[in-house]
Image 1 (cartoon, rainbow, N blue to C red):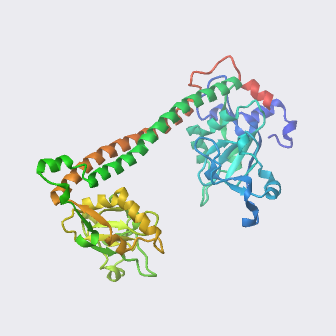
Image 2 (cartoon, rainbow, N blue to C red):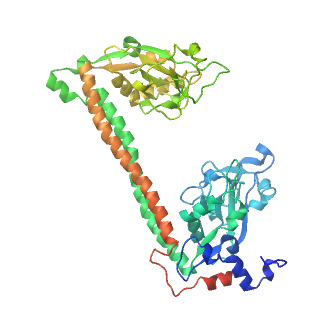
Length: 464
């Protein structure tokens, strides 16, 4: 702004100079009838929310919507699920400077940076907290969806994030938001771009939904494979060919054919370390996906080892996590972790007789056993699967030869399912990449909607 002049005292030439981004600073070329502007120049208000004082007293079960970042969906809509409410007097008092209006553009400025949304009539009344900024455009003729999509443009996102304030928690300032560069198209072209983006996104979202439905169905397919395996259906033909009756299957408790032992916590006042001492410590978070996950492995210091040295696992032991959010996760200890120390939040099943470890691991992962585990947890005082409960799990045991046949057939089917799941996950990720590509093309004027006879500069002058 010219020194000593208020905004309303500026000439149109001075306002244009303030609003327009010099050509040498353009992030990329746009059509000749477009221009680049600073977001602040076409905005009436750029502000952010605040957190109400008074702690819990400011909130109420029934009140006014109070927006947080987690309420901003990736699709640009506001989710009212788990929405926090503030009292009416807090909304009109302490928070009155952060009262949102219809068509305000939201931009997250702390935590997950750069998430955007547009406020709808159905969202109001609403305040926002300090992690979310809001932009109120200065003229109704500017298409708020166009501006929101332009901010979502991956190039603009990178520019915004490159300017984040360097602190222990990176954040965007209101000054950065105000100085954000926006490709400014003629008004009719703004609407055409929005229409084209939403039409293409709608098709991509439909494809993503179908891919996700197919992905979800594979969990049911896996459960069905395990059910067929342990009901004898999967090896029915094998038994006929080998003259074996399903009556040869025996029902035994785990304690009848194996030993069940617990792990051990690190002594009070001692800590695990990242340095490889040769004594890995398997936490519940490492016991996933039927094996041991390497990420996050920590080690027992040499001086601590003598106190927990007897609580180890051997290659081939079956584990079950028995405390925490993922009780019932099971798998087999691989050769790499032979002799590793085991957390107190898991038990090992060792010294198996007439039972293959993989067979037992898959059996425990089946729906019937997982349901049994959850039932036992629900009745436990501390929500823990005790060693006694693990010992009492009943297993249907065919002969070793049939167990081998079951494992071979299961792993073949599950491998194909995993391949399909991996493919679908790649498809879902690729659909998001396509969205970014569409946005990049849209704000370069490459969607085939631009009319060179329309002007953006005249619209900008009118707005200013």
